[in-house]
Length: 339
View 1: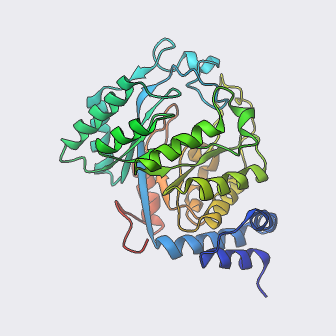
View 2: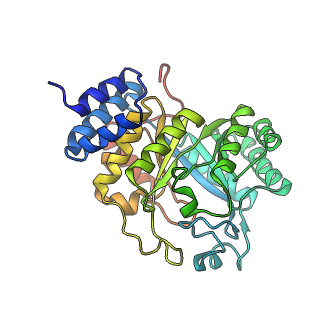
């Protein structure tokens, strides 16, 4: 007789959207038998993505000097850590040539997407033009055939259209956590501000990349509510999952990191909540998962952010490529037909 996890996972595998109570039951049973939960999450990933994975990288367009008060972020001027990020408390811009070089390096390593990421609540016209100039420089590089993503904070529909016209394929903007928990982590903007940005990006016919960060002190109910909001309201093509890397000088510097097996359960829950979505593992995997990083794909991940992050270092791309080869996984620039 099938277990609760098996019954729910089979429903997800056939395309049925699991609801809040389903996902709560899945996690309740899965926490008692993690291996079974991971088995089913891996099976669902395999059904939709086979042995293929995508890699993405990011490069800062503007770093530090941020007036927002996200409690996990080392770029915020609200926290002591922000004073040492950027240039003397002000944002530091990355030269266009350096962004173009990062795109060339990423392409050479088999990376499918590169994201230009700006600090700050919303971009000015100068900020928008700077990333458009970077996109133009990348487009002129024959050795940098790579899809472009922008992550610039809150944008208007007109700004989204400008990015799309400049060759950006995707816009990244995380919801971060549940609507309930969000105000405990951020007070300088609202959940609805973020949703409006995501709707503007979709209206401009940009693909949307939207996920969250875990280990802030949220509950399993918050994690499930985030997954359902992303699935039902945002409908992204990619869902990046980040795990808190506590940074000295931020309000969360002393928070206890999530256990690796709990992280894997989070990944599995998102896979079973969104069987066909590209579940991407982003910040915090190296410091939090350590020797269990290769288990991410069994837990349902289909993409991996490689290289350095914004304020912390990743591990070498060669190590990640070796891990994928050892697992029999194949990095691809585009998903094969039917995936």
